[in-house]
Length: 389
Image 1 (cartoon, rainbow, N blue to C red):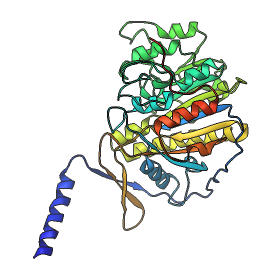
Image 2 (cartoon, one colour):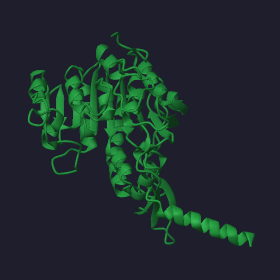
Image 3 (cartoon, rainbow, N blue to C red):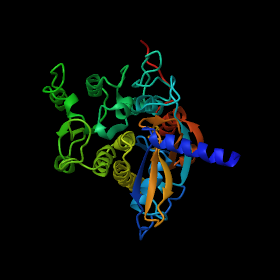
Image 4 (cartoon, rainbow, N blue to C red):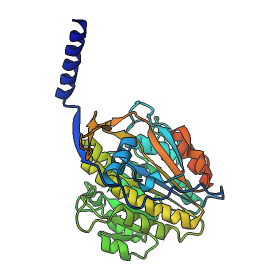
């Protein structure tokens, strides 16, 4: 009788879970194992670091990476982001919440501090914190930001602007004008054009007057030959339509331009829409964006291997969706994905590194430590630093 009662209770619990709209399941196809598996990269000598390429897969936890691997290259295959020789985990909470958003998460990387959700490179008292990108500019290095969201979105904004709330994208675009950043590549035309800004300010002309070459499609990106680029390839975030460049194309062009500076560079590349797929509990969306991001990781690693003075760091700001790899079908040709949330979770995220001093990023660390370590390794200063009011 007691056993029967347990069975009934378990059945009721399972039914209640199925009826809870928070939970969603999907199936993804399992790919055949790839013919050629990328080789794991070796540790390299700890020489002086000239360049850092920070690659942030927004909303990307272990499940997003693993599901991408299974769907794209098979259970025994390997993504390029899985070839880095050093790996660890990053704790992501913000100053006011155990569940961070992208603004506070990116500010931890850019400024080396904890701050509140929504904050763009300011502390909980709304004091401006200097970013690694700004320190790099002051040290004579070149800098760049690449994203598949609006370039004024929370993650890229946190490296080159200072506002109280991430929603202030018109103000962020204006802040960019004085940032000194050489390369901006992403979406967000609506925040720069006089036709769509609420104040009718023509920021496009302002940037062009400052020497930036304006780019609006992939052909213009391919042929761009200026030392300062403003690429705005969508009104908001990328819609994956004709004329929009891939993240790989943007990453390669950014590296091409920034590496002309003999002093070195700092580049942040965001795979913005992995997060958006997680918010929508859309596995196909996530996998497509993981592939786009992983191709860009390969471009960064190819450069770093040839250059020898570049540190590549691949990580995330938080996990999105509570994605879980649930079970495979009896035939073994598909995998069930289980989602537990439509928002971010507090699950720690992976971090991996290749290049000089990659071992600094092994083990467990807080997201603020990542920003602090990057700044010191690049030799541009010690974070955090606050500006006097």
